[in-house]
Image 1 (cartoon, rainbow, N blue to C red):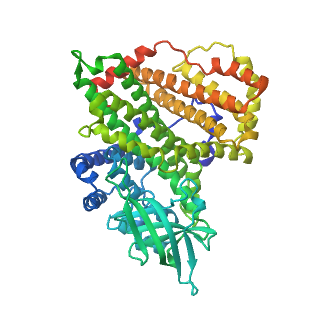
Image 2: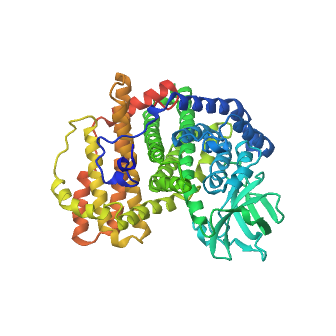
Length: 588
């Protein structure tokens, strides 16, 4: 595949979904499935039996488990072959993260090691820096940490106050400042620290724990993820050799933001794995627990929850692996020769920055919904520590804050789209003007489901038109956050619905009658849910940004075009709930 054939970041909003290809979980290779099975076995045999001890902050045990994970080669997935790594595709990387997801604290700790703890060095380190540090990180001999957040700047890292001053002889930088909420701080050996040289040039440094002047604050007492280390890193005249500058002076923002793109996607995989585990706890409990002489799974109120959770998981999983597949397709076109390969690699990942942010928001919100319902299905027992859903519920909350808050990511999505439209990379605004008459003419048309998932593909096409129209109308008001958030929510709903639809359409031909029926059911549940999300977001965007007669016209158009046919919804939910109850796990 050449780069000319690839879909650009954000282009899903402009092109017809029908005929598009995407990577789905059904496409996993035998090698990918084997790696997933190895990871699952490690979790079942090494982590879950000791999870209570890890939750008590036995950091010695945590490090031991990290090294056991490294011995299996799971720290090598994203590491280049020339440095002893496996350099596997992003789909495999996400699959490993997903399988680690149910372990909570261990998943976040190991992700801190293999993601933001190692990738800055992988992408931006010199050959000498990689030679010195990379093998130590991939074997687990050393643990890595990423120091970006500060007490007074979380979502705005470029306002950091940590400083780096070059010594008079030019041999070292003196770092001063405080970093906040640093994962792995208690036992990390190598810190990627962001600081401003001369208080102006935002840059990154590789700082060893043994360097004089570096100290670790007290452990934060957290609501969840209790087995992780989270503490301040204090820098007082820490002398860092000049050769430990990571990347270029003043280019630290590239390191911070580009690494976060993959970090967001990997977090999406981790939370999807946690959501599947929480789902299994809920489905299993609903079958076992009896009330009024019946199992909880037999009650309509519980069946509906299980069905909605299934639909949410299907959309999250479809979306996650679609983005991973997009990255792999683009990365596969790169010529590996030349000194600029690393820069081109980062540009390829940055192409889908909006899609990575969409995945982070949707998947973390999905975990929130699923853990909340899983606890509710348990009733009072879900609030008791003896049941795993209690931990899932507590651990979930921070995922909407990690890797950029969901609000920041939603703003990022809209801002990226507006920026690309302004540069001419995406023809979003002109297309918005072009669809106005088309929308007005189509408002009263009836939709006919003549093809497989025809009603759903028609709905999706109408949603894109509504989005483009509103996006064009809002181009002069792109500084208002309420509008940006509403537009982002519309784009997220579109991408989630399209990912689910394309996966189901791809999987249906050749499927058994039962599997086909389940796919039809999950599409109906997903489409109904996401149509509601889209309609609410579109109404917010119109209310905030459209005035006068145009607002009335927009309402008149939006309601019929964004509505979804209601027939068969209850039957679809019954079918999904029955499939989950029979298997006790997520049925796809």
